[in-house]
View (cartoon, protein in one colour):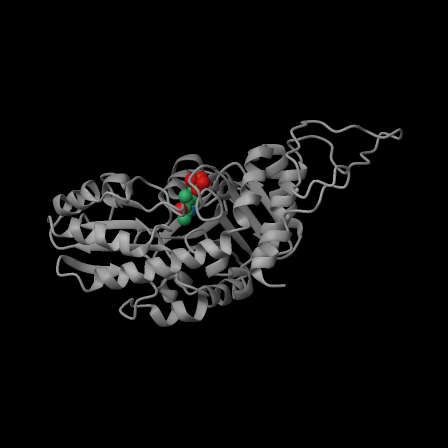
Length: 373
Ligand SMILES: *Cc1c(COP(=O)(O)O)cnc(C)c1O
């Protein structure tokens, strides 16, 4: 089946008892037992599993071409479930530009429990040199935030598997429509479903997807059900609803981002544009190999410094100045000031989540804005 059909049907089946075409939200936190004390409905207790969550996990597993998925209350909770599933003392190799929320989680919550090195994953020799006897995991995030740098998933998987390491890919920036890491050999995919999967900036969620239900997956499932950082039935319902339009939304994001990147690249006030779909992207060839489409996120640097960049984000009208990404509305952000004083992000960098407004309106707004700096 094609991705559009899976997105619509894998999360929804006609309700058996009422014949409602759309499955209702099951709010019940507990489920009745049968005469023998078993659970004839297949559900026991809301923290452990819920019908709406099962529907969401089913469609997400199928979209990523995985075997099973586990939904969490946020992307950070999904990431934390991975870290909690590792034996204490495990060493993790992570990207030097890892999503700052997860990097801070490792440095703050897992200090003294797990060990980690944040390195440039595009340097395969450095990655190999960084492998220690107790290394267990390589964490990949590609394209990365906010520089849209790519990591070569196939090459890193090959290196990792030669050393008996697992590979997790944070696929949030790409979405399952633009990149399928499990087909490139990854052992686990993570998403913040707050972003493209939710797509309307109104749900916080996260997910992990596995290609096999092995012993590691069982530990992750235990973190989910015993830890209890699970999404509500309503959140699951709305995510299933959002996913139905995900393939079409992504097509719009990708088209708009490509046109916006091409517009910015030609603009006299712009220093550089970072978008994997541009020929000028240093890893454009890799992008063509490992991505199905180039996504809806781009960054650019303006000529000047922090003042010029801040003027842009404060002047645009259609782009909301807010963090996050993946919603139908365009968002814009002076990234260095979000990441704080120790950031390595250039002060003149602006990150854009290109939305689904008409591209001519977005370009007109951006053009008028750049004329003011
Ligand atoms: C937002 C984000 C996360 C964290 O997800 P939350 O839903 O905010 O907890 C992780 N990775 C990336 C790449 C993200 O953009």
